[in-house]
Length: 325
Image 1: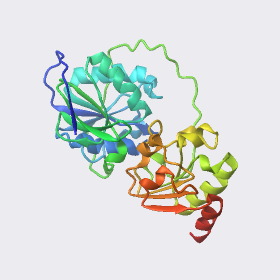
Image 2: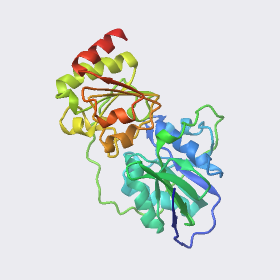
Image 3: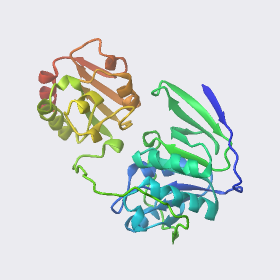
Image 4: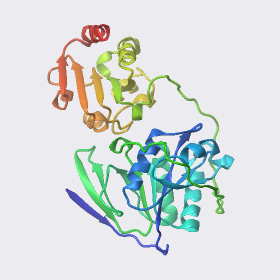
């Protein structure tokens, strides 16, 4: 086990509580944020949640483990621009006193945490998969092939949490106090939100799904990907994923990419179809409870970690599996 000690000093006084950023979609808290609350609770200090959506504040107040909710609902936060969120978090930390800021290791979390670190002159700890103590964490390095135990001596500790490593907190507790918070530091943001194009699906969300059916380069084209992966995923009520090779080849949208540069998943069942098993892809799914691989190449690396492996032509095996299900 590699131990890394990071020492930084600031004039911030001793803090008492942990601040957790809850991302939301409409009026719903994201599953990754609920897992982040679980991780923050393990630090051993009272947890205050900060959210930028009034619509989601009621649900946030009922999340188990949260003792208070802060709502910053200005229009500048409606699209979670990191340039706006960073000074907001700095103001909250300085005004109300926190030892920790914890965010999901999502696209937003990965974007905002380094900016907060720069404003506070501290070093974030990214992709935490285990909380050892209030200042010591375990995180993967080298595409997940090694684990580093990282101790931070910063007066304010910033951390992002890999959602797949922690069970989501429940939303069934009695309501806790909800307070408004207004930032005083101007963001001086020169970034402007223009538009967004979201892909909606009735399938489970990839990052939190209990079952995932993933396709790779072996599917050859988009038509085959859709013809084989979609029906199987429907039968299993599973989310659809893909390797980077499949995404780069245009088989599906890049929001479905699983791997080191995509989403990190750890479902109960992961079905890899036509996926060779490059190390970057394995880094994103090797913690799945049961891995099933279908590939015509018996030497494909995916078989080294698969619990169940089938060496077969996917064009024959997958339709048969789908029919029998």
